[in-house]
Every structure is written in C-alpha cells, then in structure tokens.
Length: 193
Image (cartoon, rainbow, N blue to C red; front, side):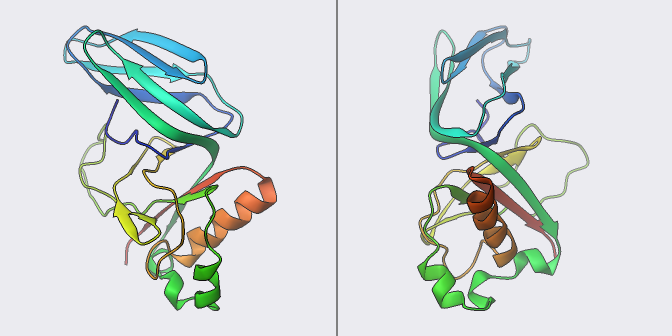
C-alpha cells in the first residue's frame, strides 16, 4: 500500500474506499478490511488500486494488502467523517492562542478525533502519494501522515492537543462533529499564509 496508509487512519464513511500501492510488475494483490476483500493485478510498472465497498462509521479495523511475497498491515483504522479545512492564516492559528486555551488543551483527549497537518507542497501534476512528510499531533509527539483523493489517513491518535497544531478551527470542528454526529472525525487543515 502507499505510504499514506498507516496505523490510526480515518477513512470516509458511506462511500467506496480506494486503496492503492506499488508492488512487483503484474503481481496479484489482495486487499482486505473487516471481511471485505478485493483482488487486483498490478500493471507492468507495479501500480495497483482496488475499491473496497463503503463502510458505515465504525472501527477500529485492520486494513491489509498481501502479495505472494509481501504483506502490509494497517491497524486501528476508523471509518467516519473526514473534513478538509482550508484557508489562510485562520487555519494556521494555534490552539494555544484561542480563548480558554489552557482548559481546551486540558480537556482535549478524545480517541474519536484525529488531526492531520498537511505540509506545504506545490506540484505541476497530481501525485499518487505526498512527496513531503506532514505533521500529526498526538499528545505532543509528531508523526507523519497523508491526504489524497478525499481520504484522510492519520498515523497517530490525538491524546491531547499540544500548544501548536492542530489549529482551533479544525480542532473544534472535529470535536463538534464527533459529538453532534456521533461518528469518528478526522480533520486536515491545509492553510497557507
């Protein structure tokens, strides 16, 4: 699977789930998640993709891709709502600068909300994967993650919002969406100042 498929992912509910990657040329690939399986054959350059059926909100699930010579497993995958939060400086504004910041940080732990900060990157053509790492905040640690084609993939659970990212707009959107819609939420702020 592409590098952006990683532990603690959030995938969009109620729509087919696209999974892609690279293997050996013409190699058979089997992708499974929670009892749903799809087979495909890689092309001459090793690229492959499958479309798993849509899932209702839920999880955690395990996503697996297998060939005759290799297996990749992704754990703690949630299915819920994915929100791309786009803007300029308002998306880069830090939680530490919001009203009641100390209280918000202290009460931020929620495994049903996951946040991704997309790195700044410009490309003349679409890429199958992100070329540069992105930042994931999880209790002060930084990890890598990715965003592609309407699917948000996050590599770490948010245990507590630290003093920087995610910004308050995506953080509060994720929290309210999780509470009001009763589904897991992933947010991806993509802002440029």
